[in-house]
Length: 152
View (cartoon, rainbow, N blue to C red):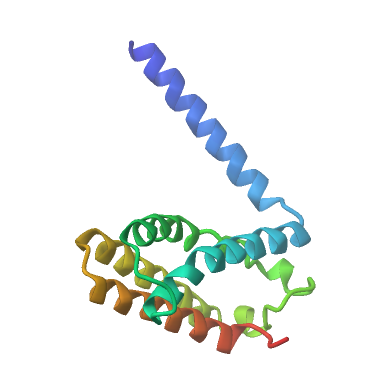
């Protein structure tokens, strides 16, 4: 039994090392595509929540819970693909992302924290709390887009 556990742990550690190494050696254009894909999915799952918070569509507890769960995972995904070697790639990311790394990190953390609040509110089944948390996510997105994303 111990041999199987040790073997499984070693295999897991090796797999993690390979996965990290693969991410570290991705081409800059692939990193940009990865982060854009994550942001597109964030938008996909946040959009209906924003519409609920604004009263444009009916509030639906099941949708809130489902989308909050997706956003919980997605809110962590794009950030490691904002590497300095992607600064010259075609994207809407402003140079301030790299010049003001602390500010960008703070903006990321604000979004992740807002999503955490949504997840907690969705479990309490408190519509007003959920809508307030959705509003906080919207503010965090706007803050990052206003400061770190080029307008079209």
